[in-house]
Amino acid sequence: MMHFTDEQILQFYKSALVSLEAATALVGRYEQEIHARIDRNGGTAWVNDQGEILLKREHVTPKYDMTYLVALKEHLPDEAIAEVFHDAWDEPKVVHHDAGYNGTKLNMWARTLGNKVTEVMDRARLPGKLGRLTMPDGE
Image (cartoon, rainbow, N blue to C red; front, side, top):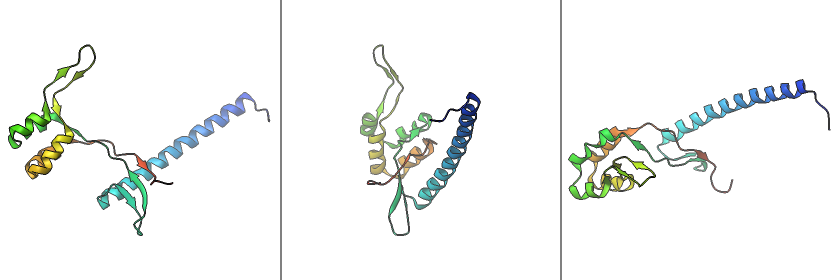
């Protein structure tokens, strides 16, 4: 094994860091373009002209601004409110839970009741990070 001086090792390390930063920035730009192409096609995967899945985007559960969702009480029947809404609560000596809505059940009611509910949910949706890109199975 070759012997390197402390100065040489430090220089190699600095060069590697610069390369890593450049590569990370490049990956970020590629991911941005891929997400844009997936969004343009309205899907959850990047597909080539032959219909083959090149990359998949994982689902990310959206977050909502609760102040906007108050309007749901005008559009949801009492049965739905009882099912999807919960008051704030504290677990003994562990965790505080804010008041909020059960997203899975709320989405079910949104599909059932339609536009008025989905419009409120769309206004309340907070911007969030996009799902992680993954290779199709088998690669």
